[in-house]
Length: 147
Image (cartoon, rainbow, N blue to C red; front, side, top):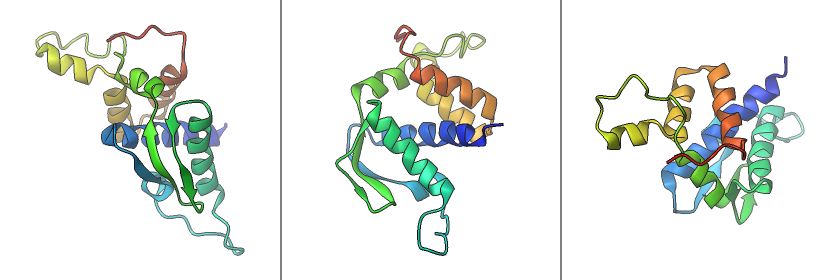
């Protein structure tokens, strides 16, 4: 089993959701806010888990999901914000997300059916399989942008 991939999905989703909550402001995105405090190794280097999370955030930037101005040591991305690509994907509707909630007002259905809301709920519930599925949807450029 590739546990680092599950960590990647969790880190990527959590990082993008923090930026989504701050959008359009630029913020410092701290690794510790995503994974908690990790003790450095005996040489003072960040743990593998910490490095993996920072690597996920940098990968998101390289793939065009977020922008940042610099890193703050190994601790954070400074002046980070979502790109248009990430914003549009996080705000698109997840197919069948609220099929059984037709009685809700349309504005509530619109918000609760977004990929951002579905990711937030899935992170809260701790459902790693659904998180993997939703995160892959985020990265899937072939899906139409449903709003």
